Length: 442
Image 1 (cartoon, rainbow, N blue to C red):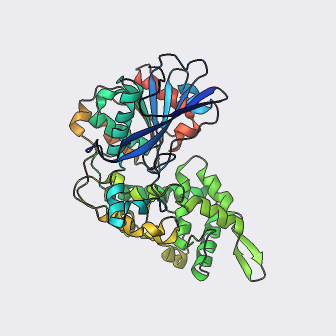
Image 2: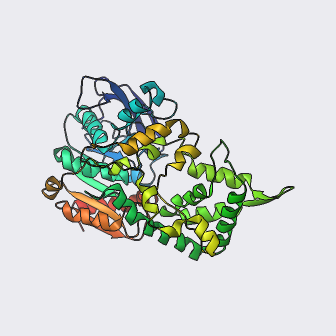
Image 3: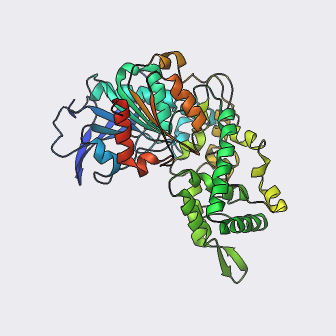
C-alpha cells in the first residue's frame, strides 16, 4: 500500500541520504477496551527509499527493545534500515510513553493524579496495549492489509503477543533477541539471569584482568566516601555494580574497561573519583531518558495474580557471590549486575525519586492479563524467523529456544556472532538471514 495520510493524522516529510522520512501522529485510545474514551498520541516515522514514495510497497513495522525506549533514529540509508527500504515501507514506532509519543515520566505523570492513578495508567503500557496500538495504526495506514513486524528484544516479546492475539494482521514476524518465555514468572527470569551475568562479569575480568583490582578499589572508595553523580544520582557500590548492564551489548566490555581506566584522579584531598568517570557512569545509570524501563521492567513478565514484588532484588539473595561486602572481605572479584531493576534505584535516581510510590504499587499489583496463548502459537501459520544469540545476557537462551519449539513453523538462527543488539551491529546480515529463513530460502 502507498503511504497515504490516514484520517485524523498530520504528517511532515523530509529527506536524508537515501531515505524519505514522514512523521505521523496518531491519536489512539488509552484503554483499547474503551475505544471511545481518553486518547493518547503515538508517534511513528515512515521511511521509504527515494523514488518509491508512491509505490505499492508492503509495510514493515519496527518495535524497539526496552521497555521504555523510542524507536531508533535513522541517519541515512545505513544498516538494516537501508536494506529494509529496498523492498518495504518501514514504520519506526515510538511505543506508547516513549520517544515523541505522549510522554510518561516524573514531569508528566503527576497530571494523572497521585501514585495510585499513575500506576493504573502505566498498567496500560505493556505489550498488549502496544500491539493494540499497532492494530489501530495498521488499519489506518494499510487499509487493512497485513504487514511484517520486526521486533528487537522487548519488541520481540510484543511480536509474540501479536502472534498470540492477531496473527491475521501479520504477513511475517521477524524477531531478534526477543523470544520470551511463555509462562516464566519474573522470579524465574532473574533466577536464570544471574548466572549469565556472572559469566559476563568473569569474562570481562579475563579480558581485562587489571579491572578486577580497579573495581575493588572503586567499591572500597564508595564505601568510605558517599558520592553523587552529576545531577544528584546517589552513586553507591550497588549502583557501581549496575554498570555491568553494558556487558550484554556489542563492545560493552570494552566500554566498561575504558570507563574504569580513568576512574581515579589525584586531588589535594587525596585520590578521588574523576569527573570524567562520574559523568560516564551517570550516562549509563540515569533513567531520565527512559523511566518506563525502570517502572515497567518487571511488569513485562507479569501474568495472572502473582505480583512481581521486586523479583530481581529478592532473587539476588540466592546468589551471594553478588554481595559486594563479601567480595571485598574475601578478596574476590566484584561481580557486576545486569538488566535488573532494584528498589534502591528509585531513591538513587533523581528522575525516578518522585515515582517511588508509583513503582511500589506496580510491584505489588496483581490481576495482570496473560500475554501469550500457547495453543494459538502452536497452531501458528504466519512465517516467523528468530535470531537467538547463543549467550544472550538479557534474554535467556533456554527460555527462547523452548518458546521457539512452541510456535508453529518458527525457524531459528542460533548464533554467537552477535550480542543481544545484533540487529544494530550486524543490521543487514541479520535482516537478510531472517528474511531468508522466513521465506524458506535457507
